[in-house]
Length: 228
Image (cartoon, rainbow, N blue to C red; front, side, top):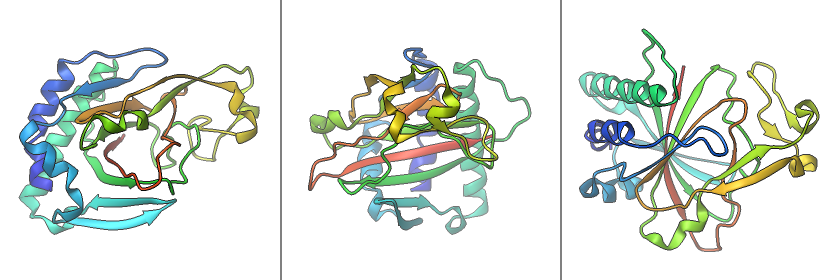
């Protein structure tokens, strides 16, 4: 799987450079044809790929790309191209990180009706101040478009009462369930094949995973995450 991903980086970089930055309701990107068509099936069949570790948490089955199973030269080149992709994306958001080497983590996700991650949140982490998250949608066809990511705006006037801020995080990042009415759904991105949703963890980038996955259905995706 590492080689398959590595072979896509130049294509991904070109697609990012030629795609629009959206600002409604907050800065994000939604990039079509992020993977070359000949490779898309390989991404969708990640469960049978080599070099993957399987785990489960909060109802989500996760396959993590294990870099320790590949050669040093393979990993170094993968990280080099991943870092290049990060800086191209960051520049689209008006951000420059000079002399920062930022390779990605890579996780593939299988979500079903059992998914417990359903809060409205920002991608905040204690081990970094800034994060870019790039989620590649991997449906087999157009039939799952309702399973896209939901984008929200905070419409309240007291974020300290309406959301959680953990010690070590930069800002409030999880909406409290008894105050979700203070977060307004602005749009749902369609869960379409071969599209990538990119979100920075600015203080207003509130979003939510799908909460309507049907019984017997599976939602597949791939998360590239860069932590500065």
